[in-house]
Length: 307
Length: 297
Image 1: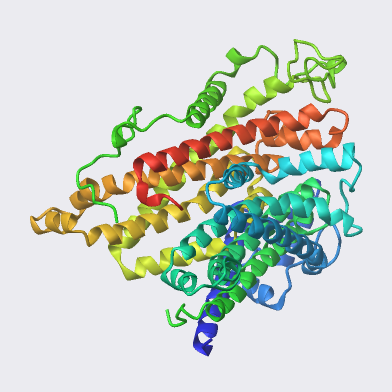
Image 2: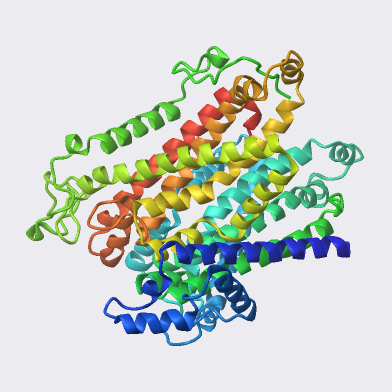
């Protein structure tokens, strides 16, 4: 991995963070006066004027923009109105819960998607292959908030196997992670199936077969390592989708992560907190993408790093 | 590779005559029926149900599905916590879903393909700007943008469409640009240029007709995604506001009394899945008929 590639990728990541911050800066000013978003409806004109001055909204836009970027760079995203604490620390406190959920969901996606994808490819056009395709199509058409409700109904309300909501122990992660992960499992399974089928037609596989490599060794040593490369790229995209999907899933299961926090913050008009969670979320997405960009040439040496 | 289609218009006739005798599969017929029903509900809900979707009768609350003890034929799919007919709310909920989805797809498609064509035609500088904007998209996915907008300008139909368009244009732009670049190198486009056709003529007569089918297929799949996203927004309380019925907000309501009235939490979801599945199946069929090179996407 070249240092130049790493630096270029890092530069791009920083550019994206800057871009997102700018979008947020513009969005806040879309409404005209951001202070009206922050104070309660009963606040007097004096209070509004005081806050406007305190936040610098009475200054010119370029000055405000520079001050905003400086504060973002320092990690100062203002004070949460609901919690009376720095917004950034409120958001970061919920970060581990969301990461746990996304990681568990990714585990479900890989754990279910990889075996079914390989099985479908090996037994191509069998009953199981068709069944897997139908389930994958169904999985792609089912919103997580509905499959989550069904999971609560069946596993929590009727069979009483798992808790319906909350986040105190690992048992609370099982249902949300499965709900969130099965959507991705469907996709992993389909992509891996196509990749395995494609690799199996490659010349080197035919050669290995001709010199007498057993079917199991062929699959494990020659086909899978090549087919899984495509899945790694997919998983990066999936992890980003899972983080986004966590917002909805956390709301369904009353799971105490950043997603549920931001929805509550919208409801209580806690604007600084919304802004903090959005920026933390997007920094997280950029970070994931950055790591994958760095890992990819290492995983697949055929990809040049000097694009 | 596929052969270029120099003058062929977007072939989407009802008979789908492109490949001669391609049979209508039952799944596709079923999907078209589902979509026809949903469209009819969206246009004229009062014809499908006589019940009021907004005002319920308190004495009639938590009536189960017809056939269960306590259920009645007046409420085929039961009633919710304030006695509103679940079926009526599903029927009336079709309009916001299809409206937001189709408006967002059309706007995002127009915006995205125009941006992509411009970037492809105008060259480096524009390309950098466009692709930079597409990259920012990566750090600010749909839900985060929708949340920011909802917090600032308030939740509602317009906010939902705006967020969907602002995040939905990227694939069209990428596709239009890539296709333009590859089409421009084809002999038939070069021939058109050689005989002196203007840029606008080349674009409208030769590039767009070849781009059309691909864009239609992509639009179909993104329509399915947008229906899901619209209902997700309503579920989170950031889309259509109660008491107006929408599938997402019905599910959100039902969450608090799921154990008492499972039907209120099951059937709106069935409506979403049936619609999205139908759109996906029709999209798959269009892909097969219109654009074989997209297969396996």
